[in-house]
Image (tube, rainbow, N blue to C red; front, side):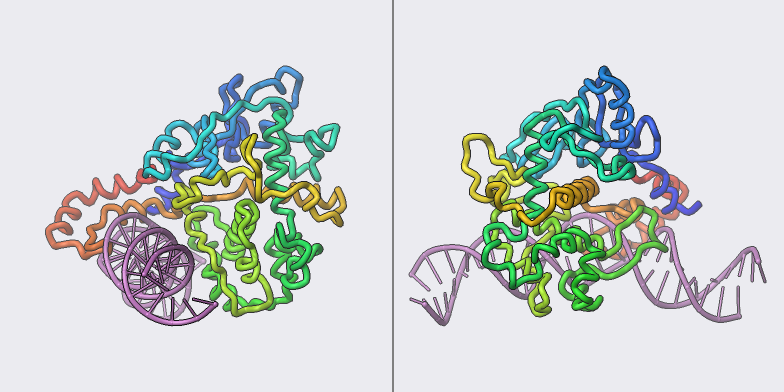
Length: 374
DNA sequence: CCTTGCCCGGGGGCCACAGCCTAGG
DNA sequence: AACCTAGGCTGTGGCCCCCGGGCAA
């Protein structure tokens, strides 16, 4: 086996912890009672088995390392973090230190599966979706926050619903298309060629299938995902969404105007964003929420079932969000970090360095084989 | 209200090279 | 069909330049 394959497929310490039960899926929650990390499906199955099990307190797994129970919720980063990651991230700079973090309360009861009322857990749309979909918690707060966030995704155009529906393509019936890339691509009647999409979104259409070791999204999926995030964030922040919306309109001359890099990296949002509680649309109690409107902003023409389906899809997409940069080849990262630089650029290694490398080549190779611990 | 100049932040390009992929022998 | 080789391509991180937005005059 090649070095890169070893390092990438070898399951280094940085990979998300796998479910202790099924050993196949990435864990999403940590059950304190069972001292076990569980994926969504196993959690649903195990804790729905009986009443006692359903009372087990669980916490989400840290969204950064995906290996430890989350202890804090950073409102600015919209992330549940373990103590280690929290310390690491929020000691990075003064702005990060100002992020408001709150302890994460344990969740118990039915996270997934059917529930009796509309305000409680929702029925799953299908058995397969039960595997992934986090439906609700017993805590009203969490439910409401999720509802609000999901609702913000369903908004056609917050604050401009009444006036702009005819201009962009964000018409009522097209929200679905916006939420789903494939549908979106077809719905715009191929107004964007591949070239256009690359031009405007900067995401090449490329399949990494051949080179891919790590499961990857297609370029379109990534791009669409970012679009979703942008829309979502704009909704949350109350920003004028016209600019980014225009990027999806039929006017090909308008490009995306809002940078996504901070979303991509997703570790420490800088600037004033840190002062805004952006992670949850629900503002702290006692504050005025200028941005998220009353439920009447919801598109009233959506049938309950349709809305439910969209919320479900939103939640699934939310679960698959990847804010952090994905390292596909840990060995390359290792090489890059070891490589000599001149003003940040890679520099040629000197003859002496090459000789040293050759002398210790066996050691080096062995070392790269076990590299992926980032 | 418009123009000009300055400041600041962020994005993207650049670099070398190990390893992967593919075509051809 | 299996194997080998050569050449092209990809991905990786840190720094710096350039561009655009914001602000004041």
